[in-house]
Length: 332
Image 1 (cartoon, rainbow, N blue to C red):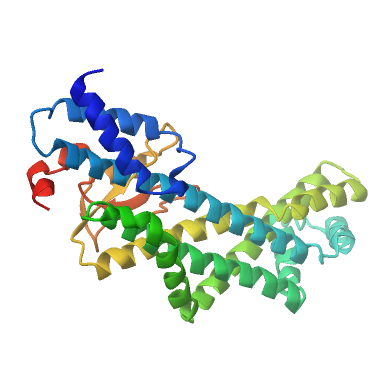
Image 2: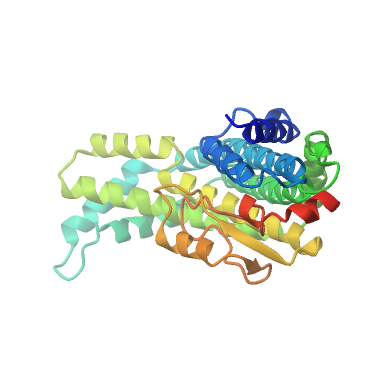
């Protein structure tokens, strides 16, 4: 290992450690980022500002690690809470009666209309979900609302951390991260419009559950499955809250994270952002194109998620090694 690489590695490690304990475990993919930074450092070995610049890049890398780990925990917590609430709500469905009604419609059907098609079954189930007990609906609505509050707060906190990591005294990030988050949670909890957003996501979840269950029962009936077998399959699906619930809550959280980050960038007067993908073979073409077209004006950027399961984020422009102005960083 060259002396330049060794010094840069020490500076990078020191900067990374400034992010605090939440930067560990080190996320997958970070090793590639570290190698990229060290390769870049070796090409700038004669620059007097190299160590300071590498320290800053270490702080940025550490901040990204914390962001990844915190977002993963938040998503896991609230997807679990929402799916449990959705399962409790769906448990009130009269499955045997639903299947009996489908059987009666099938016996009376004409050639023009198939009343046991997935769409027809879903149309029967959706009103029943909407008419579930107030306690069950409230539990799911509350879980969605709290997910939106905390995801929005996390988005603001993440954006603050990335901006702070490039400024003098960035070591305070580790101390103040949770303070920033709680302050953002307190502010967002007072916003009534998040309840309206929660109602919209709740409606999407109920639609998704009805569609999934309708499709499952229609397929079972078409296959000649017994009532007992269809009830068992439905209970397996609904007992896990339905795949649709997880998908929609994940999308809601990702949306709130991005909206929170953008709100912070705008309040701080940031001029440009980069659209950043996860950088692996799961990234689709739409997101790759959005990343390639970076940077964007803060008000002009495509806002992730661009599709279900999207893992892309918005970040302050020019946080990569190749864009770092060594002289400017050294003067700071």
